[in-house]
Length: 216
Image (cartoon, rainbow, N blue to C red):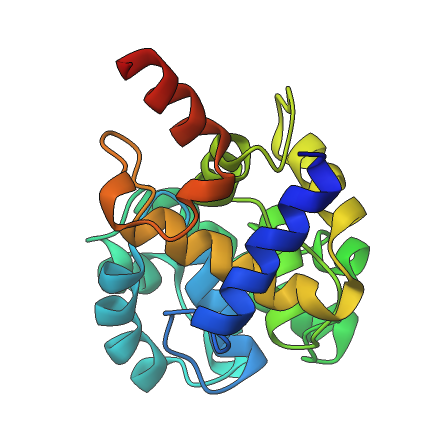
């Protein structure tokens, strides 16, 4: 099976069995999603959603966050990972967004990466989720699942994974495919013990193919 054929089979499966897939982060505005994604680094979406309930009550927009003290931000987010750095990033993001982007979250990946706390993964999430752009965000789940399925080959970095994935996925499906891979990695193709017996992608999965061969 060629890689193109593998992509075709896997994408078709997801289109049939999971036609709707979206982020599990709770948000109402581009600003709220940006805050949530910054907080989600090395932290679960479930924890972030707990934190942002009170966070958005106190800082409902860019202006209010830019006026906050970093210490006050820290108090609200201290139950997530790396709260010191994230508190500084959130304040810096709001300040820069207000001063240089008129408080509007940009749609361009390169412009987004000018904001404190926003790397390529976060920028791609915002571009794809908010603006429906063909940007493939690669987190640990996407990196792992893509490699196991055989959608990528010898990709050593998230950027290499991103480039290999977008090569074989139609632009209009990239925002959806991002969520397909994340959710599959979160609930089925988990890191330590993938649930191969529950996986509908076994027929086209390189990992399962090798696993089955070794057990014979």
